[in-house]
Image (cartoon, rainbow, N blue to C red; front, side, top):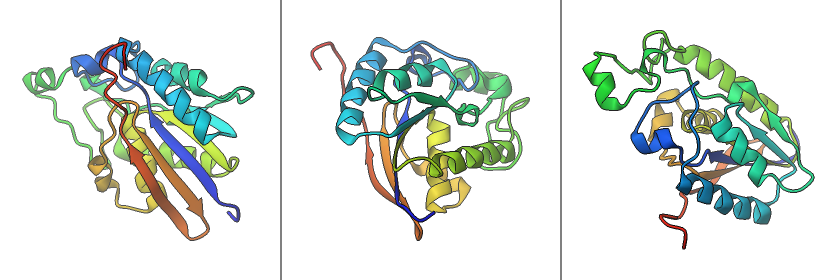
Length: 201
């Protein structure tokens, strides 16, 4: 890679399942009222930053806002590899429900994140494929995906150990900007969304 690449990673806005504290990977959930306001805020951020390409997870909670924030004339490219990890038996449950069911969650190993779920190794492989597609794209790209995927993409590009991915705080609608060049990658900013608690925000 000779030319520099600037990539804006966006965690999808808040969903109803996020409000309820549910683990959702491959199942979907509609945006909350605040999530819709976050989408409008993100549209302004992207408009100022600019984008030659927009990539998105196929899941509605990421794809819908990606289409809403894409600059005029820029199509959204759906990458299946940007889908969130499959939580298996933990899908749709709250943390308390997971504990009550005796389900163990393991984010750090190469095995399943949860019983019947996707393995860490499989997750890392497909996130790596997504990273390669994005890095081969144009000079300024926006990627709208999920918290787990954004964290894995950051450690991939920054060449950090996989287990450090969970040390990045990525609330809904958070924005991380990376600059890629021949010498590696630099995290230029990591921005949480504003509060947007009510319609006046």
